[in-house]
Structures are given as structure tokens and as C-alpha cells.
Image (cartoon, rainbow, N blue to C red; front, top):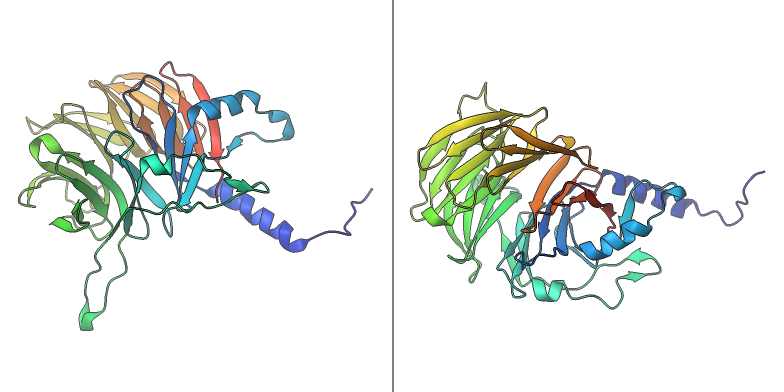
Length: 371
């Protein structure tokens, strides 16, 4: 029995195939829990994806949807409609951070287009009257309050270089600053009030992957494709210490970094290793080997959480002992975000996000719907 092709629309069919292919290959580069993180019941978090969107999701809504999700329809992963979604960047959105801790906080994102954009979280998180028309996700019109654009360098005859991407951000509300890690091998300190560059940090020989603010010492730390991490003085803009080998033959990129709450301990993800540094002593106290390349790392008090190019979330103590490993939905995981209540959100390839409870159980797994 053949199907009725009377009303067949070849263009719609092609478009649906391309849309499905785009969804399957989308990557979540960053997830971030919304303020205030001090509340015991986590709910709102934001997802930054390779299609340039920021999507705001409610955990309570996701858990309810997950409980009623039917796998008998041939779907293996729930596709979740966000509470709100914006087209934040022309190209992938690589990082998202909150500047501030209340409803007046700014939601900041950076991306491949060399821009940082900021929205007032209180306005961004307001529910829309209708986010979807006829089942299609539509772009909202919340305008950014802040826009920072990477400088372009002048070449011969006044020609401008391509716009360098911004791969990561760190915020320091105490000094009114946002720090960015750029594709031109520089880090930048931006004044949030004026939108101007306050300081440029030059010294790396290749593009930057990560930047972390160490506000207690008025420093930032950067990690680069050149295989080194550097500590910079924010008052002078000078590099005060280089961590890692500068030998081009043996170097492995520093893909991720994190500081603990005391800002005395630094962990660097480099290749398939984690290096733990005691910063006051300027000493690497341990190196932890991982089966796959590290793509994100963070502290949970006196423990280290890490993910990489495999579907596993690992937890280590400061001595390098493996405490737990949890299987995740994305085959390659790019992001960890930890709520103060102990709930973890990880995101990665396939546009997949896994939310894991403090006890290690999976609260929900979903793929965020796009524009």
C-alpha cells in the first residue's frame, strides 16, 4: 500500500530533514544557574548553544515534563520548549555568566561574533504571553542593555583584522569588571558601566580558551592553546607567573581552569590531565590522569568535578582519588554548572543537557528546542 502523495511538499520535507540534522549536531557550550543561587530549591538556568541562542529553562517544569514523557513514540530524548529564548550571537554562543546576585543581575553571553551582550535578568526571565505560534519556536524581542565588541587590529594600509571570537568570560562585580578570553591571544578587562576596555593582557602566543578572576588578589588567570596558563596583575596588566611548558613540541592546550572558594587552589585541564596548584606556594601538588581530553572543570568545596570528550562526569578529592563517576547523555560534555544545593547541570554535543541531583540520580535529560 503506497502513501498518498497528492499533497506532498518537497520543500517542507527537505526543510524538516535539515532542521532535524541541525538539532542532532547542535552543541551546548555552557549552562548556568540563575541567581539567587543561595535558595535551596534550584529552578531557573540558562543554556548557551552553538546556534547562537540563549534558552531559559525551569527545572520544575522540565522534571514534570520528563515524568510524563513517552518513549513509545520513537523519541529517545525529550525535546523541551524553553521559557524564553533569544538569538544572542551571529555564530555559536560559547559562554554565559551572571553579573550580580538578584533580579537586577545582568545575564551576559559571549560568542564567535566577538561580542559580549547583556540582558537584565529580571526582564529576560519574565514569562512570555506566547513563545510559540502554531508549534514553532519564535524569537522574542528582549533587547540587550549591554554590548561590548572586541577590538580589530590594524594591518598594512589600515586594513582591519577579522573580528576575534570571545571564548570565555569571568566577572568581578566588586570592581565593576568583565574579563574576556579572546581569539587574538589577548584577555581584556571591560568596565561594565562605560562599556570601555580598561586593560589589555598580552603575552600568550595563541588564542585563549578560558579566563578566571581572582578578585582577592586583584588578578586574573588565563589558559591558552599555547599550552600555558598565566597569572596577571589587574593593576598593571603584567604577567606575574607562567604555568606550564612553553615547548611547542610537547605543549597541550589549557582548555579549562577553576579556583576554589578560598582562591588558594587552582585546577587546570590540560589534555587528558588535571593539574592542581597551591597558588600561595606556587606549587603543583598533584596531577590527575583522565581517560579523555578535559573540557570543563570546577570545584565543589574540597572536591573537583570534571567532564570531557566522553559521556562521564567524574568527581575527585584533592589527593586525586576518584570518588564517583556518573554516565551522562552527551557523548562529549563541554560544560558543568553547580547549584549551591548540589544539583549539577552538564551540557554537550547533540544539544543535550543532563540535570543530576546531589545524590547522583538523573532528574531530567532533554534537548532544548531552538528558534
